[in-house]
Structures are given as C-alpha cells and as structure tokens.
Length: 240
Image (cartoon, rainbow, N blue to C red):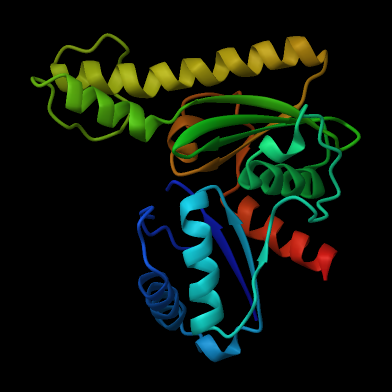
C-alpha cells in the first residue's frame, strides 16, 4: 500500500506545527491509518510533498521509525513530467508542481489550477503540459484570522454566502466582504491570466475553500479535492 502525504501549511487534514517532533508525527500517522481500517504494516511505500521545510527532517524520521520505509520526497531531481518555466525551478513549491501535473494528466491543457490553502495559488499549465508559473495571494483562512485579530469589535461569523452583497448586519457585511471579495479576486485573476495567455484554459479548484468559492462563480469549472493525492501517486509511479 502506498501512503501519500501532502504536508502543507493546512484524505486527512490535521494541523501541522513547525515544532512537531518525529514521535508525535509518527503516532499521528499510525493512528490515522488505523482509524481508516488499514494496518500500518501494510504500508510498503511512502511519498511526500512538503512545503514546511522545518518539518521535513522530523517527518522523514517519523516515517522511517514507524513505517520502516524510506519516503520519496518530491523535490529537485524527482521526475514530474512537467517542463518548469520558473527562472529557478527549485523555488516552486512541491505542492504546486504535484497539483499541476495531476491536473494536466486528468484534464489536459491549458489549465489554471487554483489551490485554496494557507495561500491561494494560481498555477498555469500550457496546452503542451509546460508549467508556466502563476501567482500567490493570501489565503482565505489567514485573511479572516487577521481581520478578527486586528479589528477588536468584529466577531467570528460562519463562512457562508449571504443573500445580498449589501449586508445589513455586521455579520452579513463580513460574509459579503469575505466570500464575494475572494470570489471577485478569483474572477479578476482568471480574466487577467486568460488575457495574458491568449487562450481559454479550463479552471480547476482544489483545497479547503474551493467548494465555497466555486459555488459563487461560473469561472471555476470544477472542484477536485483529490488532485494532490492522485498526483503524488503518479509521481511515485513515474520515479520507481
């Protein structure tokens, strides 16, 4: 059995702390594996994409200690099948490359992949399958937390779309600003990317808030929450 781990600043979504110890991570992975009805001993391969460098060493130690396997870590030297057009390809986060490759394999190109994680990333893949680059914006989660922390009079609200853009209570006003504000960002970014690309790429969304924003705009063609895990499997198979 292949265990695929997407270690992000956000399938299982436990919180990741930069000071997590190997035993803490190992026990958590074993617990989650058993919780889903699998024997940890049945794991014979592990592949990892991580964008939290301080945790990489602890994660590798945890996998080696609790699963007795040396993980494949997506990074420089790993084949992805994508030609990367970044000036320095090593700067691109592993999660962005994995999602881009996975989306191209499933849907072809050209594509815009929007990942609603800690940051909201926009990644562009050409018709030929080249990774052209993209954009990074603050994510919904950290933006909302900053709003709560900096504005003492604002209370937490349920993240759902209000009936109207013009809110008539503080809660409605916040919901309108957050949900419709991020929706407008997506629509504006996609429009700019399409004009610069000179094409009409399909738009695929993934990540925690993907469904919430996709419900507000026809710009997002579909939501695929399996992109990362399927991409990790494909990369593992490509490199073994």
